[in-house]
Image 1 (cartoon, rainbow, N blue to C red):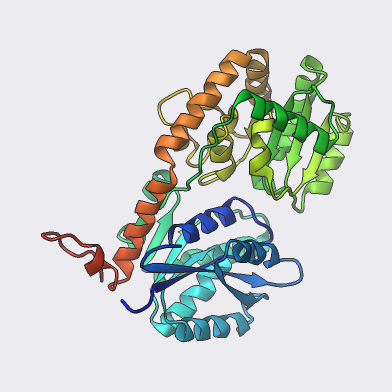
Image 2 (tube, rainbow, N blue to C red; image 1 turned 45 degrees about the vertical axis):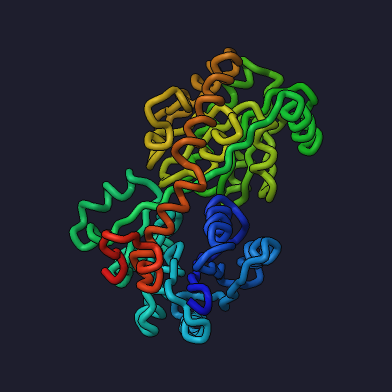
Length: 393
């Protein structure tokens, strides 16, 4: 093969969060090999730039498409031109805008499309309309990729999707730190956020939108603050509900105990410096932040939504609570803060679970299998004597 097989991953992006970090993992897997990953996004005044810069800093090729509504065909034509000029062998789309425009461009240029489903938020009527269109455009995809077996099993009920479904799990590198390193990180986190040096830190992280359930964590804070007056509750992330949530904290009399830290690009590096992570989501597919916290041996309280049960496995790797239940969140956090031995054991068990079930090596195998199915040029090279090629179906 004279040149690498080129694969384009396309995702709308406002900042570098969990999904973007997964795409950077995908590109890293192809740094040496038969394939070459290009990372693309839609660039406007308030979107796309941070992800493009992160990709460039890692040395990856990028594509910047003009942003706009789905009725703006500039991005579609630019994508069609790029697919042809760069001889793209596979287009992988992430999110409804990429799925819809990618479906059209892929069909026009006869490039197979794999739609990676990273969750539908339904956060307002406009998004709900687009997500409804996204579901219809899945018919144009050669493969529909889920982040968990849980989601794939749910979608298998639809006959039109059944034969297209594949799973590529999120992957996280586990971080093994000594006590001295954790102590330094604890000090760094508190100093950086302006918190008392010896306070306990309970954190959540994610987009501040309704489906993330941050409101239920805030409702749990007064009870926890009465029990642990020195604890601080840090909300990492940004979004349209930030002002409303800050007003809620103030109304509860918890402004001094709750810190809205905004989007922190190096949040995963700070994770070992917190005491406990809460993921209060009402709807989720494969919550990346839960995996990141577990990989850092941080104990997790997470609502039982999406693939959280699949993430937990059979062991005592996290504490699961019902969604939309502030009292259950308060009880779970209280029990872990009162019993640091139990919290430490859950943190270590969670780290082991991520290392075994959500490793980059396993993700790489699943991603490679997907590529081989959809790119005929790869299958003969990868196939072993006596086995049937999986390409071309």
